[in-house]
Image (cartoon, rainbow, N blue to C red; front, side, top):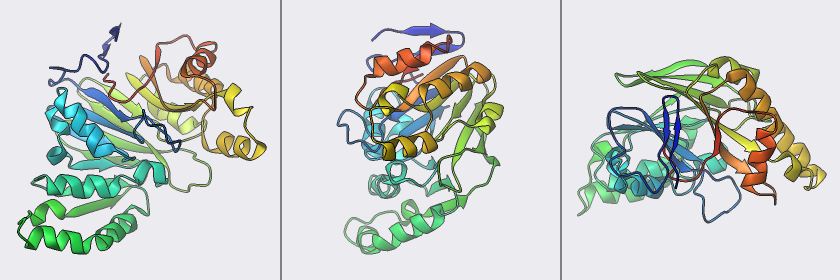
Length: 299
């Protein structure tokens, strides 16, 4: 895979991850899929990695195994036992099916701390219900011959509102409201570190609020669908996707206002077209640096 050098940005790619980890901020795409069951893409999830610490955004299907794959390619902070902090953009199933996985699998694999979760209203009930569903499993793992660490099974869930939601010595995380159809609580995130401003759209349609929060960022990771592809779908799906998601031409408008150093396309919905044609649609209206994101790409 080619390297792409940008101003303050390096696209490392999946075949050149080894020794990529250092104190600089990295964005690792763990899963770039959607509800479509594409076997080449895990469900929506990504990681911000800084100072050998990982921060996960969303937990689609396959999140822990994809993180483990990245760990073996040069990111030890993505080993299962190191997955301790999770941010959730919204509670759609494709973004949360891996919630039980990211809570429980690292606990089995010797996580030595609780997991802390930051997500919209409803996140606490979801995590509480999962812990109740798995209470027999958890009891056997802690009290049985496995002698599991009870601390690893502790979950602290924080329900968020717009504004700063997290801060430590590595970064500050700010949540901002986005429009995602009928969801009352859907968020994007700004991750500000000493060397990068990385903005994650989450799932959303055209959002003026996102434009405000994302201005002049280093990396904008944004969902997108093919305008031409959607026109081939039935009216039901045209109505749905145009209300819940962002077209290539809408995203071009967003990017022209935000002016990111790098635009990374994520959660791409091609609807029978191709990733290249989706990219071509966007580039017909936007002349900045843009790439189609794939699982295990690193920026």
